[in-house]
Each structure stands twice: as structure tokens, then as C-alpha cells.
Image (cartoon, rainbow, N blue to C red):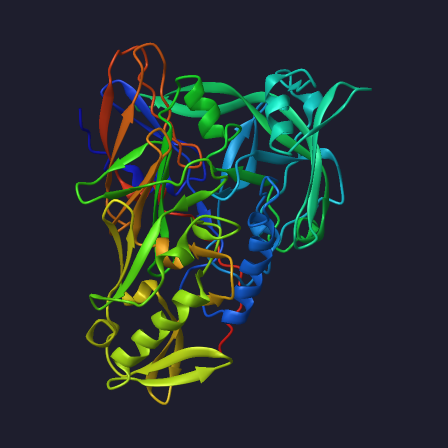
Length: 496
């Protein structure tokens, strides 16, 4: 069944969950927000510093869960997305950052020591209070979830209080600790045009009682992190294990202007999507990158530099702003780009960055780049997906290479590459798919459900319920306007 949701643009202006009924099945939307537009001028050195701090946390071979600190990083950085979730009884709303590089949903507790009390984002922070929620339950040491967390080095137990707790210390010196809680997560829906009803599910999440380092800073403080990683304790894994959702989520992030986009717990359907398998048994979204081509010509790169082994590999991470190539791939990549465009643009070095003065449109000068993955899936990058615009010099536009060189370690595909594409994280089939897409347009979303369970699509918190209709799937035409990020700009322009 297909239905067109065309009235959501006005509803999306409300910072609340918005739902439209489709054939008796309610669909609720919670708008995402991005703090700063992608086209804001920010020094590459600043972006690299922010990404390095993040990679110090997620790329340690320690089995420690990565808790993103995007919400507490430098206020001039770009590409940070957050939304609101409703938790507890009575329900309270919490601003949480969306992060595909971590698993756990965690919130700051009311007993938190050294947690930010205010936010430079202009939002009012909330703190979760287990004593004030009638549905909250602490996770005991004997709980299977605690045993699983202990196996992945993310928890420990206090036998004195029989409470499952966690402590994380990250490579950049920041840290957090707290304890695990079970409580209700609410999904607001509209049955018809005016009758509201609530759906909910009990989920396990973290309640942080201490923050240190960047996590304690106020500049971009939010109430917590909403992890969309592949681990068993992520919300998507918890809900899918109950048969309430398909084990798949998708996003489409708009790169132009103030940005915008869609984040859906469900599968976006588009006929041109190509898929590549995930590397199995990895804590992040690792892919098998096999080669890189510039203007259709394969670069002389040993495929083994991309292989997943010994702190190497290729990772898709929406929490990384730029993109990173190992040196063995970066040098031939940069040389090929510069050789191709040197007749039509002026290569210059600005603050250590390779830049180009471009007198005309990018498409007339710069080549397409393709990243070729296992299974024949190619990710084609337009110039805007490997270059960053930094104003004008001598009457020409200055564009700088957005890919950064790493001496060793991981190739990381961040927001620079992910924007203006549909990405589907199909955990059930252990694959990731993508295609170019105008993320301001509508998208088709398929939700596979069981005959006995409701199903939810999540856009931060966006749900589709089958009510009591037994069906295998529903096809929804969802207006992207419903998900256009409510952008608040907290930045000062900085130029190279």
C-alpha cells in the first residue's frame, strides 16, 4: 500500500512528534535538528581536531563502546544532528545526539556530577530521574543484558547494591560513568486527524552520573547520545529483537544550504540503491573497500591497505565531519585530482591544505571519484563530496580537498561523503546500501512487520504502527519536508 503524505511541511514546523495516518496505520515524526549548516566556513584544522578527538575514542582496539561527544565539542563545528526522545513515566523529553558510531542510548542523570547544567545550543537541558519515573527499573547484576555488556567491556557490577554500572575512558581524556536502567520510550502518534494515542516500549539505556573532559563542556551540551551502532544493546537491536521493528535504518542528509534530511528506522526504497556486505563481527560499520578511481582511471593502490585487520579498515561514520584516507591511498588520490584540474584551476596551499582557485563551476573542471566496494558496489562522489568551499580569493572560488591523510589506521567516510545520498544500514542482512538522492524530495519507506507485532519507524522518534492489521510490509511515501531538520545556527564565520 502506498500513501502520499503531503501536508507535513507545516506540521514539521512544530518541535513535536507529528503523525499522519495511512490506511489505518499511524506514522509519527520527530524532527531532527542540526546545529550548524554544512556550508558554514570553518577551518579544516578545527574540523580535523574535532574528528581526531572522536577517532581517539572509536578506533581503540579495546572493545569499549564509543560514546560520541559531538554535543560537547567546539561550537564552530558542522554536521551535528540531534533530536528528542520521550522517556519515563510521566514522560519527559530529552535532546539526544544521533550517532551511528555508538550503540547505547544514554542520558544524564539528575544525580550527575560534573554534567553540563546549560547548553550553548539554546536548549533547556533535562536530567533523567529514576526515582520520579514509575516505570523505571534498575538493571541487576544477574540480568542477561548486564552479562552481555560485561563481555564487551562496557559494564561492571557492584555486589553491594546489585546494580549494573559502566565506566568509560576515551582516548582524548574524556569519560563518563553511570548505571543501566530499563524504562519506557514513548512514540506519540495521531490516529486520524485529531485523536492522539501513545505507544511505548521498554528499552535498556544508560543513566550517566559523571562526565569528564569534553563531555562536561557546555558549548554544545545535549541530554545524551542516541547510538545507532550495530551492537545488541542499541535501541534498534532491542526493538527488532522484540519483533517491533525491522532491523534496518536509513538516512538521507541534505548538503545544500542549511541542510536537512531524513533518519528512519526502516528501509528507504529506491531502485538505484547498490549494496555491499558489512565486514562481520565488527563493532562499527566496516566495509570492504577494494579500489578508488578518478575520472574512470583506477589509482595504483594496494587493496590490502583497506583491509579490516589490526586497527585498519574502512568505516562509515556519520559522527565524523570530514573523510580520511590512509597515506597509501591519499597520496595517489590527491595527485590524480591535481593533475586532472591543474590546466583549468590554480592549485594553492592554504594553511597546509591543498586548495584550488576555480574560475567556473566545479562540474566543468573536477572529475568524479568512485570508491569501489566488494560485490561490485561503487560509491560515486561528485566534486562537492570530496571538496569544501572556503569563499573566494582573487575573484575565484577557493575549494579545498576535504579528505584528510592519516599515516596509518582507518579510512573513514564521514558526512562529507555521506551527504546527498540515501544510506541504508540493513543489519538483518549484514549489508549497507546507498544511492545519490536529492534529500529534499520524498522517499519511499518499506517496513517489514510480523503479523502479531506493531512496527515502528524512527526519525529520531518516528513510528509506523500496523495497528492490528496483519501484513508483511507497507510502502509509505513520506514527505521529506516532515523531517527537514529544524536548524539553529550557533557559529561565527571563520575563513582560511
